[in-house]
Amino acid sequence: MSNWTSLWYIWLILLTVFLLLLCGITASCIKFCCQKKRPPVETFSRHPYDSTAIAIDSDSTAHSTVT
Image (tube, rainbow, N blue to C red; front, top):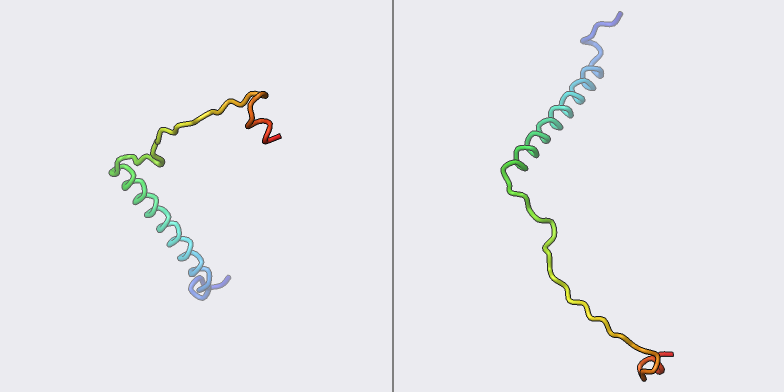
């Protein structure tokens, strides 16, 4: 059986995985803490929109010029 210290690439992989997990946990904690301190922000503002409907009957001149 090989000596564990001679298998440096396994230690490198384990260290990389550990650092990625540590960074992910740290980022999650920071995001969670920052969301609790900030008030909720509305993603879009509500603007009232006016809509206009124009009724055209079959006897109007506008309808005869379109068709």
